[in-house]
Amino acid sequence: MLIIYNLFLIAIPVICLPCLAVLLVYVYLTPKYKGRLMRRLGFGLADKVLGLPSGTPRIWIHALSVGEVSSARSLVNGLRKKYPDAVLLFSASTRSGEEYAASVFKDAVDSFIPFPLDLFWSTEKFVQTVNPDLFVLVETDLWPNFLGSIRRHKIRSILVNGRMSEESFANYRKLAFFFAPMLSTFDYLTLQTDAEKRKMMELGVSEGKIRSLGNLKYDGLAGGGRTGKGANDPADSAGGKTIWVAGSTHTGEEELLLAAFARLRKKFPDLYLVIAPRNVERGRELSALAAKSGFQAVRRSEGGDLAGDLLILDTLGELAGFYELCTVAFVGGSLVQERGHNPLEPAALGKPVIFGPHMEDFQEIAADLVNCGGAKVVTRVEEIDHTLGDWLSDDLAASGTGMKCAELVKSMQGVTEKHLELVEQILAGGNP
Image (cartoon, rainbow, N blue to C red; front, side, top):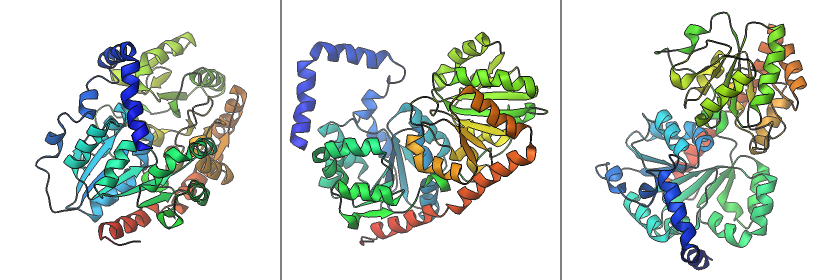
């Protein structure tokens, strides 16, 4: 399978040489990719690794993007606390993931490294240069050549916080000949639920390799929020405002949110909206959209605070702080088919939450929050208006609903410690 995969990687550029030239120019000129290609081929990698201590556990943690980095927070901080002399290296596949990791792990990680493109010689160079004692993959980002290199060099590996939607499971099962060998590469796989465990077994992964330990996100975000006041602290301009935060929004959602905001503001004049787009580069677009809807928007990236009618939070690493200030929260990627984003950020802070019907990537968490009475599903502007209106008109109802969220998060804690116990046994060379 791996031979066929590599022949495919070689053949495609040869067959599509003109397209490849255009693609390379696009990659070079696009800010999202510019400057990352050479690093992902291994250039400059030695500078990231040379000088790091030897003789201590060297652990490489990898996450795909911002969501997976967020999942890893409690584990990375737990590893640093448990192994103060260990060398921790962290990589993310996307630029936004790299930037977010650098902001939240700056005191815990020894070196931030790129993740290799899945070419045989690139993955070999990375694995040999980094030479970890343990590779930790967060949730999912499976690449045949990379995992093959990990296996050939006899590096212990673990997939943590694994999850698999029904759609993904159907695709994995159709291509089991391709995915099953990669999943079997890991020494252990820790999964969020027993349902995921059963899916992995159906794909051919040995039951002895699988642990159902719960969701790391419940530990990673509990008690989050602002860590202290600083320059341009939003709390300084929050006086007298009732804040509604719409986090991780996508195209097609903001129009509905602005329409609901217009309706709600007639009943609640002190209501203030914070829109945090999933793609922070959309700040200018959303500012124009707000103006078209009759609102004066300010942008956080331009130093804006809670002025005007609404704030566009087009920066990274500040969303949790704004959730802490809000009265109610909406979690995006859910009114459109973007599979939803993490509702635990506001829930852990005791905020009542609404989200749309498309929460496939957080299906179990969303169901837990709805079932405990801490969240509601909305599909239309009228439902957003009605649900938020009920909470905004009754402080006790809003705080009680938020408390149910916080209590649920607290009841689900302890997952990180289970993972640390597993890591300890793996590093000791045992079979947990």
